[in-house]
Image 1 (tube, one colour):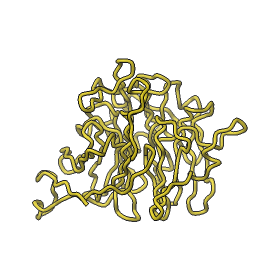
Image 2 (cartoon, helix red, strand yellow):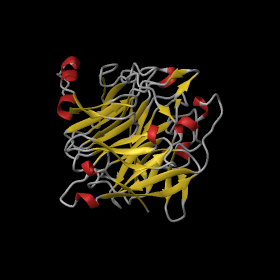
Image 3 (cartoon, helix red, strand yellow):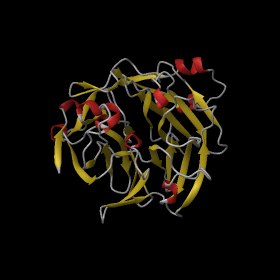
Amino acid sequence: MKKYVLALSVLIGADASSQTVNYEVFTTVDQSVGNIAFTYAGDLVYSHHPFFNPAFRVVRYDAKSKTTTPFPNEKWNTPRQTDDHFLSSVLGIRNDENGIVWMLDMGHRNAITPKIVGWNTITDQLERIYYLPETSVVPTSQPNDLVVDTRHHVFVIADEGIGNGGNGSTAALIVVDMKTGKTRRLLEGTRTTLPEHKPTVIKGKPLEINGKNILVGCDGITVDKNFEWLYYAPLNGSKLYRVRMANLLNESLPEKELDQKIEIYSAKPNNGGLSIDEAGNLYVTAMETNSVAVILARDKSIHPILTDEKLLWPDGISYNTADGYMYVSAAQVHLGAIFNKGKNLAKVPFYIFRFKPIAKGVAYR
């Protein structure tokens, strides 16, 4: 197991000089891993990154045999024209304390309505489907990631705004009521959801298509242990924002007033995944530097805690209550054909790392 020693400013407690963060390669697999969730028993369930057009959209990983099987089953991973009870294009995936894995289906590969599919890993049955109608998505929507707020009984989705050739200008938040299924699209194209002109550059090469920089809007998203504050940020941007859930969910609050209540929380690198621990420290995946960084709650300073040459495009990051580790995928997105003149430069194996966070992680988000 490798160790990355934190700078002294990161360390907490009297014996600060001895603080370290441990990390290791949990496993290697043969397809790009997007986001990671967990069954009630702690087994990994993860999306295969849709940029690589995987046959199985979501799989369960068996740590004992080191094999994967379609999740929840093969039928749900098989598109058809008779109904929409299948997974089309999944990246965002989360689990809740009830053992339900929630999969955010963007619907990009098939002519179906985007949806959230919940599968109960205790009963091995479909829990519920929530649809994202035209009132909550636009032609350039790319619903990327979500949080599961079981206190307020809502999902909050980060829409990147880069679907179907979008340029990030329609990035937004989408709120879904778990009880009624009602959806609301909020803050589209506003200061906190729009990408900044801060292109992604990896080893000197910009992330672009046909010579045009890809600027991704609202992407990473998480909520604190008490479901009080929602944290989110555009992928391409120097700022991380937060808003009280009470304000976000106040339907009588005009959007202009809501925008005024949103705080700039801290600086950040260009990042995809976002997670949090019980002490309020935020973990961001920094794809340009093959690393995971932490934004400390005590002073909002940023520090790398895991850097590895194999961590190519760190993407989803999530905490597993079963073993106390935070897991992060290396998706190799920048090596995909779409960014390399039609040639797929990504190479097997694909890595899943794990590490012990500074404080106990916050599960389910």
